Length: 287
Image (cartoon, rainbow, N blue to C red; front, side):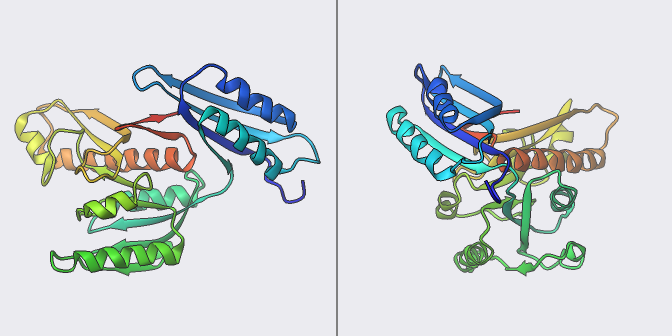
């Protein structure tokens, strides 16, 4: 097993039925693999089954391709989608911002200290405001202005950067531009956005001020996959905090920034650790 990773992550999704776990376990047993952790969920509402397990080979003669071949046969019988990932591989990530840096800094700090298994490959913005502020991270900073007349060219520039950097994940870390429906479809399941509200309330501009005017007793933030339905993609993480009449609109904004950063970090971490499964318009997120 020279240069072989010590641990792998297997993910599976398929129509729920009897014998799924037994089938996969038997294949791993055949190849002398030890299952270290396992989580599964069968959704009675959608009749879909989801499995994530961590395993490592115990034999010097282990051959990954041979295991994949047997899993391919099992997936055919189960009509399942099965993927294997090396546990220590970091996801190449492009971070997109506009004029606020709190979410980007939280992601980049998490990556630097090893909390997030991502490899940031660049920062893209529709403004140059944060170029100096974020330069200490040592990443390429791409400024691509966007207007109604240049949106198509700007999104093509974004895809060019994704291709050049080989980015596998795009994170909209308070990137304040609406992506076109076509772009959302191309990035389906690979683009995460942070919404500055506890969905579906208070969409659009100045959400914390509007929440303050309504006298809400709880504020929050929601991280979700990007879809053509604005701010209504499958939810990955949500965080909330209680508030009361003593808090000002400015207090809401300050608290909101912290909540946004926390929710986005949790969502990116879950995605990068292969703990998220799309289940129709919602997600299954294993802890």
